[in-house]
Amino acid sequence: MEISPQCPELLFFPEEEKLFNVDELILALENKHNVEVHKLNGQHGFSDPFSLKYNEASAKKAFYQMLFFLLETFRRINSDGKSD
Image (tube, rainbow, N blue to C red; front, side, top):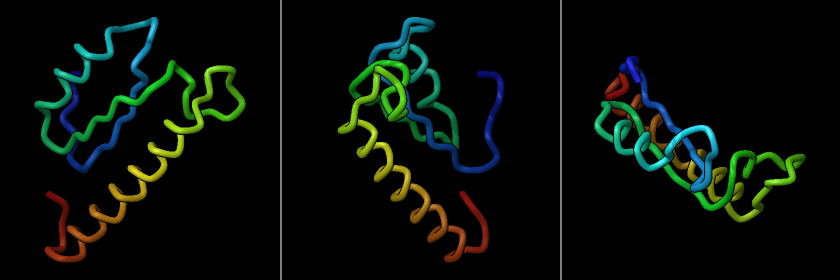
């Protein structure tokens, strides 16, 4: 929470997490510059196909959101020579 990223960051969290309150953390992170946060259906491990908590729909959604994020970041860098 003390770090302010100098480049665009993309974070995914499950809607269910035993170790911390996901909604509180997302609220705090949404106010940070260069941070994009998504909460997806499932539990910790939702995007790991080897986990018992794997959620295929959420894993696919995270994958496509990551691709879009990367494409948009590269587009911004190429259009003005630097990231926001």
